[in-house]
Amino acid sequence: MSVWKKQIGGKHYIKYKIQPSQFVVENKLLYPEGTVIKYILRHRDKGGKEDLDKAKHFIDMIIERDYKEKDESQDISQKKWVEGYRKWKNERCPHN
Image: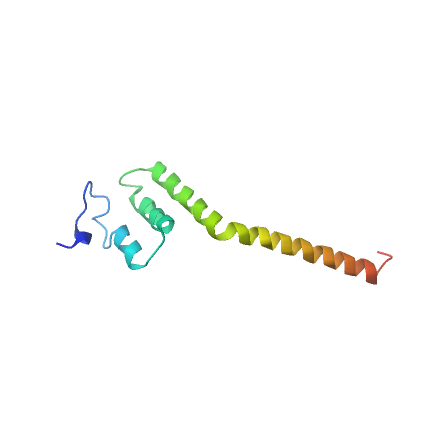
């Protein structure tokens, strides 16, 4: 029997056409992304709201990992652009 056709401890994954672990492995997802999928799938059958809170926590980890620096650098770039525009505007239109 294939490892994907059985589940040790419970039945909250085996009822799906593809188990979350198989989906994660076959799509080469990172641990946090796979964990989000796992918690979202099982919340109705196992952990309830706590599983959804865990999924949100892992989503926050992914955001911090993948987007925090980008957001900060975008803020810096935007501030520099605004400062440059104001300087240009004051030099071209000193009466404003």
